[in-house]
Image 1 (cartoon, rainbow, N blue to C red):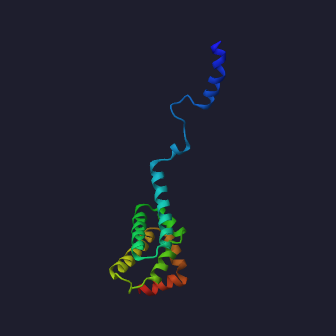
Image 2 (cartoon, rainbow, N blue to C red):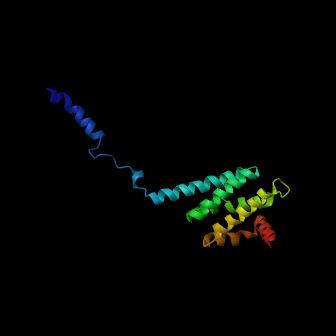
Image 3 (cartoon, one colour):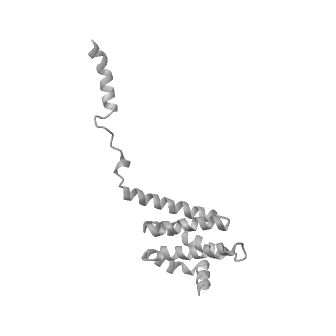
Length: 149
């Protein structure tokens, strides 16, 4: 009597819950290296977006330090830098810098970080080098060329 009463319940639960200790999930297949790379890529995207919105020197310094750190950690973030218009954002930063803005040391540090980022994303990255070389005909790239020569 109890067997006929419990049989529908046991068949329903056995279809819902697998017999293995835990269910296999697609996210379990992601290796730690891939996960770390994805985190760095997302961090680069968010940092570029934050740099576009940064208004004061202190905020820009914080974001520039983060971008430099991420660009030095993984080559895949260099592609994201280019795709998110990172070069254009840096050129905009160069063209809008105000040397009369206090404190001057922070402004100089901002420029140093921007050049360090350019160096990091161009170093040993043929696609970024070609992109920067071909795209330098734009006004901002010419401004950068004149600024450093």
